[in-house]
Length: 392
Ligand code: PMP
Ligand code: GLN
Image (cartoon, rainbow, N blue to C red; front, side, top):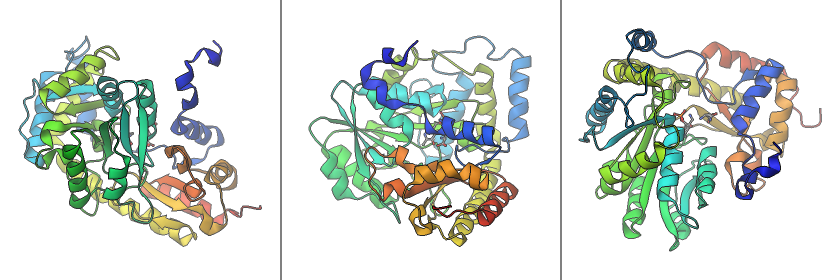
């Protein structure tokens, strides 16, 4: 079918950069520091739990629409244990096909034609895409290097009488920023003053390295207007399983369930049982992952700095951002396209995370450190011995 059949308002979406860069890594044999996924699977007991579930016939047929009860209970227990939140697993929790479906279902549920959604820019690519699918518009609020802190004045300036939702993400992909209490207080003030919903993507909730992750739903007056999204992919290093979840007030969870049921209806039956096992038994493993990921954050950030790149050390996530102007490049896309051939390494240009990138944003490159130390070391060695001159 020719692509001109795609409805015009979606024509600009193109192919996700992650798929493009992973395909480039495979076709060139380069080390993939582009798409964020770990190169070591999560806890063996969790993999075994999935295999046992299949063998025992658990989840091999359609699971219940909201998710299997044992997983919804485990998610509620996790929120209680980590954040002191009491949720009813039957009304306040919904299992989704990864955080990706949760984001899409939330945008389809809450955003109408012409509504505005404020999102922190640079933003994860599915935000603008799903807002567009809902025929809303995405209003960016910039986070700028070197700290990528959220400025309340900018946030307030983005609010109009069409604003419906603030779409937050903390820890933040791609910058690695972690919103602190002051920044979250500012979001809460604005949301309450303007009666806005907050949809918060917290898939990296257990990958904040230097300060604790604070869920915005914990702030006074926020639980009743916040839809929180998370996922097992990043927490347990099973990104291919696509088990995510939504928590929040019953009426909003029900609204997301309404759209979700006509997207996938249900997914990942046996994996839902395995993730319940993970949430109940493998949080100590997650603690170890966080520590090791913090070490790898340092390894890659220090290595990139030594190569002469201006490096913005992240406070969370899988990702570190650099500015390639410090080694003579203007255009990160050209840099990333040259990198596999020059150094057999793949990284992602950050321009794709901006609506209207200027020269400064077009020079940013995102690298993932969600790989084994040895792989990161090899990638740094390749970069160190490569000719990275823009005129080579
Ligand atoms: N949100 C953010 C910020 C992400 O980085 C990702 C990708 N890992 C997702 C959502 C998607 O999560 P999932 O794989 O659970 O769909
Ligand atoms: N979240 C991952 C990243 O930012 C990729 C997920 C995807 O490819 N959709 O790299």
